[in-house]
Image (cartoon, rainbow, N blue to C red; front, side, top):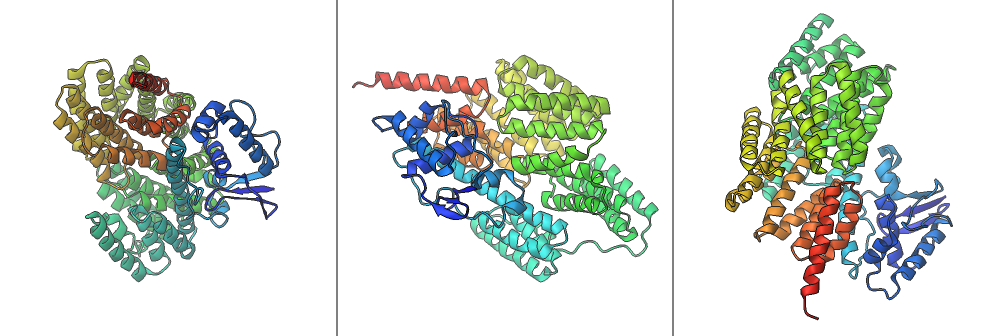
Length: 610
């Protein structure tokens, strides 16, 4: 067994004994790029990235590939053009394990606090340096995801003492993410250390006020409070009534009242010791908390995980299919693709013949692939989701699946198909009375009108979408509509107004700690584009923010956008990073933009006198 360590000081081990690694840091860089990229990579791109100044770049590449074959003891890998990785199971790479394995297989085997390729720099390879910085951000996010999963699972399994240690490591890794602090506070409280939980709330509140100028949300302090006591006179009938009352209130939009009733239902189900009733109550409570406009994902996630644990403990995992799917949805909103996929796989394994549930699982899978820029994989998932939603009579699942399918078509420049999907989605949302969702497909229809040059129509649709979003208090939908209004203002030459609206688009998502990260990045990309096109100040900081946000969450298309913006702003060293990211995304619109950018760059270079 060969084990390759890329986190921290890079090293290679054979059966536990450290071996000689590749001779030279370029070999480590090449290995990291091939492992992280996943797909086959043309040799020409590898030369441009890592051997741009070599007299014989292809020769240098061949020598380093031979080094990689030597250290992995696999003579048939790292071959061909494009170069394919094709490692066997006898070779284990730590960052592969971190991305793919469940937390319990990595938590004590990998140094989660160590940076990728610690101590190595590549000053002569500017494009590779930019790519590596983004990859380092992504690896930190993967490490945080493993620690987060560990703490949450330990809490759900009534091992809160263990969860405290994982949560402390998580807070050290991401000190300005209030969800991490909420998780630590919850773990402390449930371990019996309520005083410690309250002390940490005071500490984090003081730190946030000093450094960020704003206190963490109420959900952090709420996590320190003990669970609701079991009612003295609980009955199954009373608990069922509380559960129904809570579900009805949430469905009617009265989230706070509904969540209160659902909490009482959970307490009642514990008292009557009915596992099936407890699982149902926990799922409805967790779902309500997750989907509330100003929801509390950590609290909702804790309820959903407990539902999974209870269902598995009584040997009926199918009871918690919905909980697994909702947990995947939480991870999807935060663009944490790997844990979301694992929850969806668990949900799919127990979904049975429930077409509505299957539709939600499929549309969430499709949305994950879409956000990662894997559009060809997403399309059949969305189509299957629509089909199952129709079989199950679930109007909302059909509306959501068609909206994201329409969004995908729009991003790929397939406007006719996008229009068809979005019109259907809007009609279904209206038929279902889904007012809290209606703004979302409406904004995408408005963007289609922008694409067609119908600016006045787009302005009217975006204004309606914005008004709806504000009315229901949804900052994510408000962000998307605000972005659109900013683009309309820019198209009309009102650039001061455009700059303010595009700024507001980004800030809308930041008003809550459980917003949809892809939408925040999408709005930020529009803000950067406007700043670059109009020579506005602070553009370099904006590009850095976009690159960091996209890199941290593995949003390859938006990483490509950030790199191309840099090139457009005169930072031509970013061109290789742009090419690398574009190659990972199956979007012809993005590829065409890169071709135009390369042509413009070549034309401007040709005009420079020699």
